[in-house]
Length: 472
View (cartoon, rainbow, N blue to C red):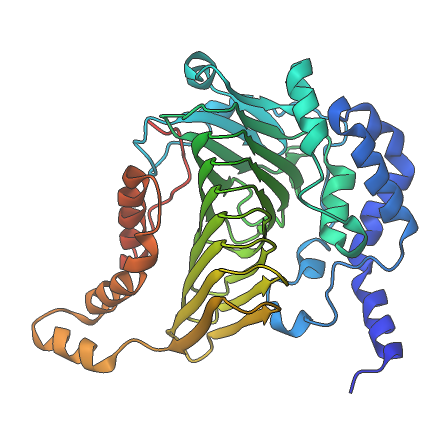
């Protein structure tokens, strides 16, 4: 049994990863503040003060560390450079990639490390009543939207070291704001690119990209939003740390699709927080097509009657890749609905983890909540950890959860090979069939079709890169 003394010792060891960032803030706090967008300056200062003063904050969750393979303390321990002076990256952001993904006729914005670059198409075609802008470029009206919402959905930083670190270091971010009643007919696509910093002699230096995304939909607004994470860091141990906050007002609807492809040296941690009002609808798909070390944390608050969320994801893991998905859905009001489905394909020596919590509050009558995690293990050294959970403090609810982990059906493989299909193709076909139902949950339809193709390519060994997004 672990004693309190040993826990404190473990916390002390794990806290070492934060030391370099505390030193950075202590020595260069004035520089960080000088280059911070004014709409978030107060929140950033409070987080920096907390991070410096609270020695108990740790990037290692000592109570659950054995169940998380994407260890935050390891991911953010390297000497990662933070661009606190906001130096421009000397490259044309819009020509960094050419994409396999959409043909969605989407409106594109590109973030290189933590600096947002709207494309000409976005500037020209953004509908009236829709804003996509960097915090530092926001109008006075948009600054008020940021001040009203920034940091509220994410909640208390006192017990979340990664959130505190992000908030303390984030100097800018991206606002997506849709006014009341506006239904955006073209998808908005945000492409995040992680690049190394470069020394004067041309040597690649590890980088940490600290990102914030704030999505606010007013009453009756509708939006399809796609966020793609890519990198150009190759084997240099770089990392990205992003917080996304989502606010859905009454009768609003958001389809959010997140896709990731990373190089071998990249670590990625994304925390997504959502608050939903009456009859709002949120649909999320998180696709880890080619992660290196990634962890996605989702926290959804269904705060008013009739709110609903569909939270779905997939991960394709091979080699030594690692992917954790952690979900918390809080049913805080009556007659709300949630549905979760996550699927993993884990091969070679890869590791996957799923932690899902549904909590139904007292008085949340008429709740319907479902959670499913299904996984296929394809190697003797592959590992999958699954932990679905229900906490129900109310009668008159319909809730269920389940998890299953197994291997490809040997009988099906034998049948297909007896019909002349070679083993690699047979395996690929069965894995595609396994992923089919979760891919059906992707919106909009044209993205669903393109994502099916990318998954087929990935599973066939063609390994087409999603990176290169231009959207059209």
